Image 1 (cartoon, rainbow, N blue to C red):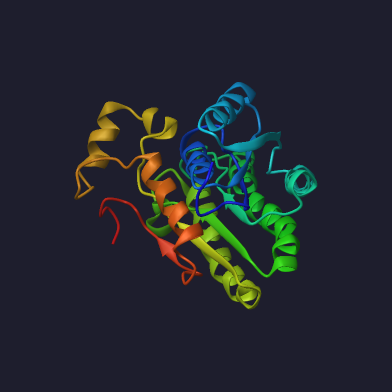
Image 2: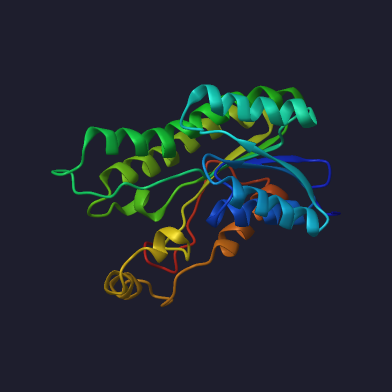
Amino acid sequence: MAGPLDGQVAVVTGSSRGIGRACVMELARAGATVVVNYAANQPAANATLMDILKEGGSGIVVRADVSDPEQAKQLIDTAIESYDKVDILVNNAGINRDRTIARMSTDEWDTVIKTDLSSMFYCTAAAVPSMRERNYGRIINISSIIGQMGNVGQANYAAAKAGMIAFTKTAARELARNQITVNAVCPGFVETEMVGSLSDEVKAAVLANIPLGRFGTAEEIAAIVRFLCVEGGFFTGAQLSPNGGQYM
């Protein structure tokens, strides 16, 4: 598939569904060879790759639970073994285990921190040497509006997503000398399975606080990721906030 990312290799964690799927599809349409990553849902990952191949793109599927440092490294190593390099890394993998602080278990805290925050470090640390060899890279961390403003019942998720923003700023400073940009995309409420699981009452309450009066789409987030990879070379350490005006 011809495009501005011809010859580049993109790894998107958690890319079998939702925002991750939209990102890997968009990058493939722009010409990148993609690595579709999943932890549990192999049928969805295979379906994503099939859609990419049908549109003329190329890539592979790699199973890895990126909350585990060894599996995260193996994901990046597999990409490099298959294609000799990694140019683009989108740290998208994430889960939520919502509960108020008084009721939250240690396991619920640890699971979200490991999956949403630690995985970003594991994958980034594994990918950076390949990027430094070529003096080029694009790292995009999918954070959240919740990491910017907080939310009742989401202390673990908010802490992880806020941590992603702070990591982004530090990594951007450290890696700029190698022409590696690092940015965070902080979506508001997007039409994914996570939002779809909310009750109608909760959805209505959320929509009442979004000035544009609607949820975002995964494709809108993917378009921003593509922009950062193609036209956004002078962005680094930035937070891009597609949220319909909910948090300003």
